[in-house]
Amino acid sequence: MDAIRCEGLTKRFGATVAVDDLGLEVPAGQVYGFLGPNGAGKTTTIRMLLGLIAPSAGRAWLLGRALPDPRIVAETGSMIEEPAFYSWMSGRANLEVLSATGGGSPAGEVPRVLRLVGLSDVAARKVKTYSQGMRQRLGLAAAMLGRPRLLIIDEPTNGLDPAGIRDVRGLLRELAGEGTTVFLSSHLMAEVEQVCDRAAVIVRGHLVEEGRTATLGATRRRVRVTVAEADIELAGRLLARWPARRAGHEFLVEHETGRDVNGALAAGGIVAESVSVELPRLEDRFLELVEEEDSRAVSTSS
Amino acid sequence: MRFLLAAEVRKLARPLVWGTGLAIAMFCVLITVGAANNARGGETSPRIPDICARAATPACAQVVARAHTAAFAAAQAASRLAQPGQVGHIAAGMLASLPGLLLIALVAGGHWGGEWGSRTIRSLLAREGRRTRVLVAKWITVWAVGLATLLACWLVLAIAGPVAAAASGLPDPGTSLWAGLGSSLASAGHAVIVLGLFAAVAIAAGTIARGQLATTAITAGSMLIALLVAGIASVGQWSPASFVQAWMGFSANGYLPTNFWSRFLSSSGPQLGAVAGLVGIAATGLVAAGIARWRFAADVTV
Image 1 (cartoon, rainbow over the protein chains, first blue to last red):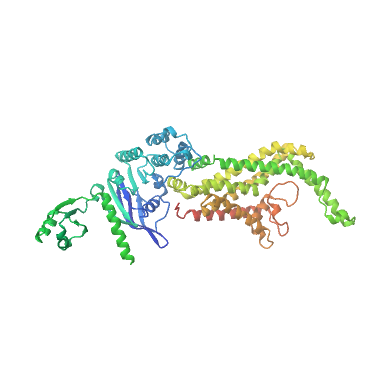
Image 2 (image 1 turned 180 degrees about the vertical axis):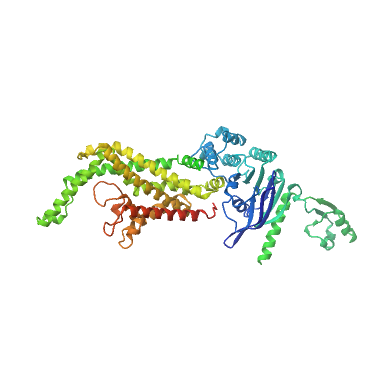
């Protein structure tokens, strides 16, 4: 069973389409990355999944149950953007209130989640005295209340120091190890690469790529070729059969094997100075996808 | 629902609620002390029109006699301050009029509108997605603050009233503690209904305003407009302010400030009975509930 499933999920705000025909399948028990630049529609998608806003079209399921279903939403732990709390209450009181709002949780649950995020020592302090990092940890603690089977979290490491970032990433992996599905929205490619099993990339409301994080960036290998200055023009013509970009003496050719690229150059009488095959990192792939989607949007509108 | 209510009650333990409740209770005392002084002053110097103060016509003699009778009656009424059982009547009148409206507007502003202002509405709805339940819990808790303040006001007046009455030399009310208590409880019962109406208006205002100050302003503003409309002869009796006036049985005359409502209304025109007032209050409350439900079903985009 998929922990999250969307079919044609769309959200329009007037003439603006924030999320367009989104289809997602998030397998249970994994850490799933939801990548996208600012304004891509990540938070809008999360709001729809949590019932805060209604989709303009399409359907979604959480833990096998069709939305809207307030009960299943309440069984899902969530943290949306910067977590907000009742500033006049202590961290512990905030968690107790949130726990009661959701129907209560077993005794010892609040101390457990406080311990998990390392806030036990400051739990009695009023939230208004907390730093941003501490609020972020408290938001995670709130999301984990009641041991939800599905965690939907937005930018969980915002405002955390390096040690905090490491702890949170470790914690997310640990939760997945215990069977919790984590849906992690982020614009930090390194975070998604380190923590997530699978990831989806959303740009301008469209899903542009989805797959295992280990292979997502490498779905298209590239060949980097360097030629002598005198051969640049001819090399450009010889390599025109593949999508390629040139920077000085270097060509970046979208192709699987270096042998084909080198062969094409050799057939034209060019001896390449260097040929290397690259597996683009997720970050490179992400930026490419954003660029492609941007240029597609520009050409569509023009 | 029990857990949700417990969570909402816990959120009320905040300076805004304590401060507002205390201020309203103190206001009751100040007004009562002032009323005792006015009543005594009125008895010795009744309100006689200038023209009659200078002329000794038979008509003026009647006016003067009536003024003395009214002043004596007002002093007798004010003497209820000396009876702890009867001061509940004053507390009920205060809370079912502008001081109570102000209390509810301020508390609802923080307790309900503030959920949007501080963006905690997201975590609230992510924990309890059944929005009607949230509305009901908010309404009950805002109403409960009104009831608690009514009791606090009564208690404070029960202590301060006899002191103020004695200091002003007001006559003995001549009623037993129990007789006074019965009359006060009836007034308090009526005030409970009016406070429920104020709370319903405030909850509807919060769903429209979605912010602390705006919720307070719309709550207070809408009822003040109702007061203004009540003064218009042709439509005044259909105003919610007239319903409150009729249900509470507020008198347009008298020195004792049993309310801060009737002095803003015209005493001319057809007067509603208490039952019609109650029906009007119920209808107004239902309209407010409908608006709240309709507005709260919309997207939460904070």
